[in-house]
Amino acid sequence: MSLLMEVLNKLKGGKKRASVHPFFLKGKDNLSGSSNKRVVILTGLALFTLLISFVAYYLLAEEENLIIKGQYTRQYTPGQTTTAKVKEETVKPKFKESSTNMPQGSGVEVQQEVKKDGTQPQKGKVPVEVETKLAGLPPPPPKPEQLPLPERKQKPTFDDLVLEADTAFREGKLLRSIKLYEKALSVKQDNTVINNLVVLYTRVGELEKAENLVRKYPEGRIIYSYVVELVRIGRTPQAFKIAEEMVKFDNTGFVSFSLGYIHESTGNFAAAGEFYRKAFEISPENYYFAFNYARILEANGKFYEARRIYQQLADLSLENDDIRNKVKERLRSLDRLIGG
Image 1 (cartoon, rainbow, N blue to C red):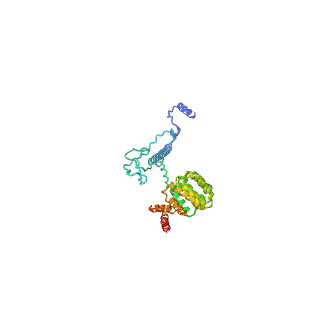
Image 2: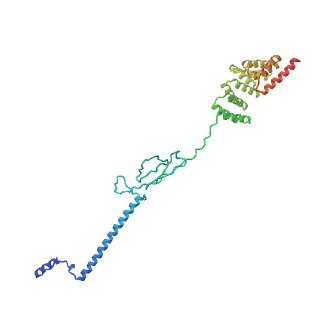
Image 3: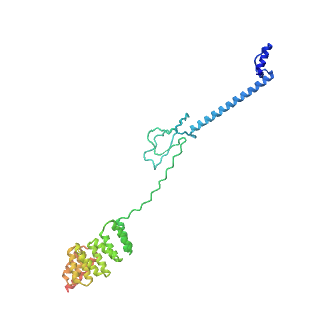
């Protein structure tokens, strides 16, 4: 307002002066000092702006360099777009050959170029193991070591069980022998195993188990073994009863021979001779039946019949040395008796 009044007064006074702000109407010394200050301020602003630009450029360039070297990765949220460009760099992977994992003839033929975006061209044969280091990706987890499987114990066979049971029986370990024979019988039905179990059951006092086996498997040799064991422990009446009951199953002569054995053990040689004869008639090829029939004939005074059977046995090539020697001895004895 004061400036307007001043201009009006000047017009009234007839003087024409330029309308200039009082700041610019100061003397030459003041004008020169103001100009220097303005220059200094503008220069400082320019330098500060240049410094800011340089720092910003440096930071951007450093970030770009880190991305290229694979030491820094930018995190993006799903759906976010970015204009950052990542320079593609090819990295030649290192191939590791392994004689245990790589099949024969599968050596490395080509080296694959793996780009930072994870794509790789399929050329030639692909190696089994490839070690690759991609920018920003963690190393693959180590493969677990394959420990050798523990050796599984083989299940014993039938023959193994029988052999071990026979050994235990010879060593006098009857209970262990029984367990092994029972295991063998659970694997396969075998008359020899059943026969041995009947004998062992009888010797350890398990008569019920022995008789149950005899009735379940009424085979002549098994019945004979049971009868002999019963007579051995003084149970002759029980032996005679089971033998008479089982004689209907006698298709091998063993049950008849069992009855002859029972009668001979009680001193009834005549009855024993009859059952030994039946056993010999059922199985004339059985040299054991023949020898015992000849022996009981000799005991009953029937020397010529006994010598005839002895001679038949002597003409055979007997594998049993004991029977063969006894036959020769009885022939010499009968020759002296008949000749005298």
